Image 1: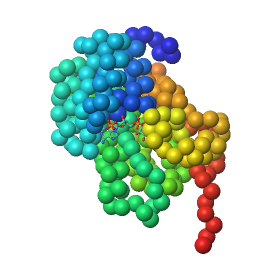
Image 2 (image 1 turned 45 degrees about the vertical axis):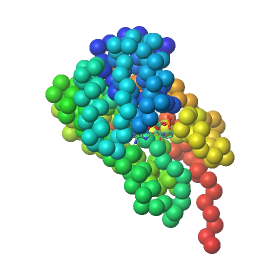
Image 3 (image 1 turned 90 degrees about the horizontal axis):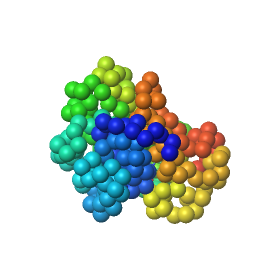
Image 4 (image 1 turned 135 degrees about the vertical axis):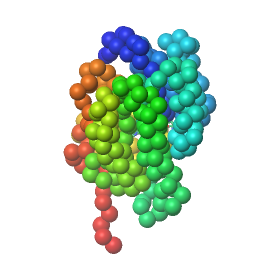
Length: 264
Ligand SMILES: NC(=O)c1ccc[n+]([C@@H]2O[C@H](COP(=O)([O-])OP(=O)(O)OC[C@H]3O[C@@H](n4cnc5c(N)ncnc54)[C@H](OP(=O)(O)O)[C@@H]3O)[C@@H](O)[C@H]2O)c1
């Protein structure tokens, strides 16, 4: 157990994309450490199994799940209302929901571009603002962690998510300043290539290329990303705000995603 049992006693957490992968590990870690935990994502079937696991740890009265598409502000408002009614105001928010698909920039359609921007940039903003205005600003307390991606030097092969994640990183710094007066911290974690439910959907060669270019020569784990997120939610990070923590085995510093083609 990395975090002391009870370290989050009295806190309500909301984890988007909390039914699978990294989000599920965050939710489990928070529940084991004393938080009341709400999880949300689009598909009920992704939420139900994890909600049962959380209930077994924390008790059914301390867990909530509800489908929500973060691209739809009305669904976000309904979710936050429901979480507040069941578990009380949100103290800890993890914006983990997201998704993208590999494509050369010249082949991304307007629909594909918009889908990724709405998901990975707009959804994070709408969720953050709703939770802050309904819960954190009035209560003068809160910790927000945004999950981005290691897009430090650009993100060839996924221009849409590179742009969205860079936007979230900048938003993280802005909100850290704007909301410091309300005692709210806002940070981000930027995972490199992680062995997760997300990368299981990618072609294995692409993931293997990611492993090879990672200085630590392995993939990260869902648990490792979750531990960094929970650190930023914990009292150990009370004086950390506006930061992006890279969980990437050093990948931002060295190597290329894949060989850059020769000019034709
Ligand atoms: N694994 C990696 O190597 C890696 C690297 C960098 C960044 N990340 C990011 O880390 C986060 C977690 O990824 P993961 O690896 O754990 O993969 P994952 O299991 O695919 O997690 C994505 C989660 O987001 C939810 N989601 C997607 N779109 C949504 C929407 N519009 N509204 C609400 N929920 C939505 C999904 O659930 P539903 O389908 O039920 O909506 C799912 O639970 C993602 O943002 C991912 O892009 C992962």
